[in-house]
Amino acid sequence: MLNEKMINIGQAALSGKNITDKEAISLVKAPLYELLFWANTVRGKFRKDKIDACTIINAKSGRCPEDCKFCAQSSHYSTVVQSYPLVEEERILETAHYASKIKAKRFGIVTSGRRLLDEELTKVCRAIKRLTRVSDVIPCASLGKLTIDYADRLKEAGLGRYHHNLETSEKFFPNICTTHSYAERISTIKIALDAGFEVCSGGIFGLGETWDDRVQLALTLRELGVTSIPLNFLNPIAGTPFGENKLLSPLEALRIIAIFRLIHPKQEIRIAGGQEIVLRDLQSWIYYAGASGIMIGNYLTTEGRPPEENLQIIKDLELTVDE
Image 1 (cartoon, rainbow, N blue to C red):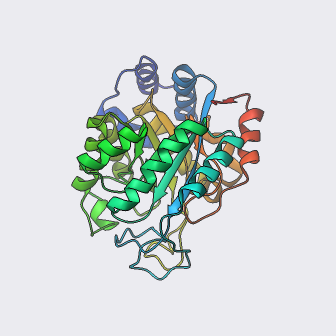
Image 2 (spheres, rainbow, N blue to C red):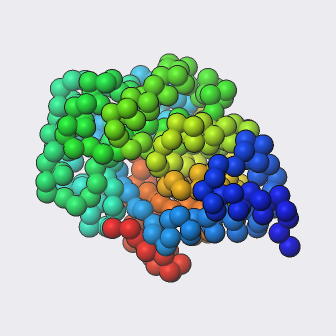
C-alpha cells in the first residue's frame, strides 16, 4: 500500500506543481518501489512515451587548465587520454551526419578548457551554421565559460541549446574544483538563458557528495529554470583524485534519477556518462525511474555501449525515440 506522504508528493508532481524542499529531501528515505512508481507515472504524463536521444563529439580534447577532480582531461593529473586541438569543421559535420544515422535528435559540440579562443569560436559558429543547413539533428554546444558576446555569436549562428553542468551542490563544489567558482558556473547559465538559449545543465554523482548535496543540486537547477538535466555517474579514471572512488550501486543511481524526476516533473531528465558501468543489467530501469532522455554512443573520453543496443532497449519497453 502506498503511503500518504508519497501519494501527496506524487500527486503534486503529476499536477506540475513544485514539491517543497522538505518533501524533496524526504524522498531520500522513501521506499524505492513507491519512488519509482511515481517517477514513472510523472514521466509518462509529461514526456509521454518519447525518449530524447543525443550524442556528442569531443571536438577539443585534453590539456584543460581546470582541476575538476573527476576529469581525465585536466592537465593537473596524469591520465591516459588523447589530446588534440579543435577539430576541423568537416569532422564536426561528419559526426553530426552519424548522429542522425543512429537516430539521435540532438548533437552536442563539446570542447575542453575554460573557454574557447575567439578564432575557435568563429570556427564552431561556422560549423553550426552549416550543420543547420544540411542536417536534421539539432545542434547543442558545451564550450565552457560564456560571455555575452560569445552567447550572441552562437545565437546568431543558429545554436538553440547551451550545455553547462553545475556538477554538484554549491556547498560541495570546492571539494571537486578549485580553479573556478560555483558562481562562475551559475553566471554562464544565466548568460545563456538571457541570450534565449535552452539550457542543459546537470551533475555527476559518486564524487563523495551527500544525499543533501544531490537534492540541493536538483533544487538549484529548478530555481534557474533549465530545460534539460543530464545525470552522470562517476566512472573512476585512473590518475585522477577520484580514480579510486567506489562505484555507486544500481539502486542508488535509480533513486537519484527518480528524485530528480519528481523535483522536475516536466523537464528532460537525461542519463549520460557512467550509466553502463554503474547500472549494469538495470540500465533499462532508467525509464521506469523517470528518465526521458539518453546520451547514446561514446562519451568524451570513455566508450558507451553500441547505439543500437540503447535503441533496442527503448523499443523493447514499447517507448519511442523522439526524432
